[in-house]
Length: 430
Picture 1 (cartoon, rainbow, N blue to C red):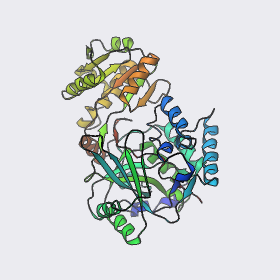
Picture 2: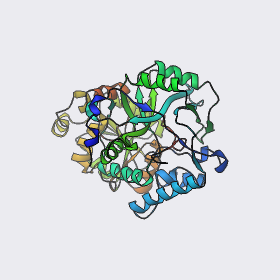
Picture 3: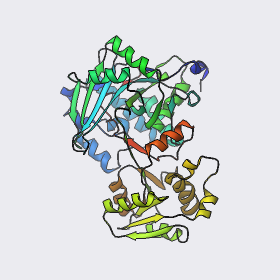
Picture 4: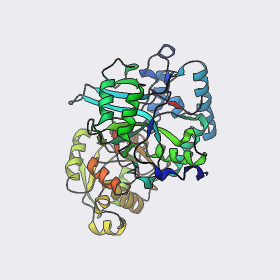
């Protein structure tokens, strides 16, 4: 790795966001803008979700972010070839001038009529010791290697990370004023969420946004692996280079608070009966003859009093709570704050996975991380495995630990709504 070109990184302060010429679908060349979008790569539920997106439109972005071939090298080459072809055919076209992009998601079906707005741009890739971009979860080396290989092959940032900050200053004023104008694009995805995108090209407005952001730090809400990938790729290239920056969406949560949901675990090859047998005498286990929604409410009630999990996969639900205190003392690391030691994800990984069920947390053959609750249960029932459903952690706990430099167990939280992939891409070369 070449890090010599980055020795001056500590001289930088705050978030440094710069405009770029976005790479966007030509609406006249695709069935619809909605049909070419996708959730972020790690939210697509395979194989059902992947196949559905592939069939939605032959140019769906999933063919770039999750290419399908017999081996990793072939997958990445396929994505690179596809991107090159789509650009040559005019399916994807670069905007004529650099811009920061205002992105809005609106869901009128929710009780609060959810609206989220933020700014998409190129963010300088900073190091952890700078305290500019705060991670809150651990990452897995194989995932970073996978994403890095794809970015090297395509020479592109195919989807933005989701970062949050507390601002409500000049940047917010520019965002709101921009959103009052007609958008560059507007589309409604099949989940009923409306997406709109605007370009900020006025130099004074760009400066206002940059000046405001320069006084803030950000929390990684979604995209820990891609941020780590940005850092790895930056270090591989002498600076200055396009790899010094990465594509992000910055949302001011003082105006647009995010929702925090749990990410569930699917344990392959571990039948529910075996998982429950291993818990005898160590946790309280109660069978729930309830539908999913009511079982989740029971989990929420139990989580208010301590660590609690919901197991599924045999056609019913099992509430697991009240872990043995001596067991926790033996298995949970003591070198972290009390708030970290008491996290459900901490107890899941340190006690249940490592000590009781002996499931390696980084083995794709043994464990999958799935955002959708019903899909996790359905897959467990279909495959004969165990679904472990978690209750979400509070956002203030996440932020407090991140400010202390303490990372949560991997895949502990799911902030949302997440940006749709496919609305604006960043090519690192012409």
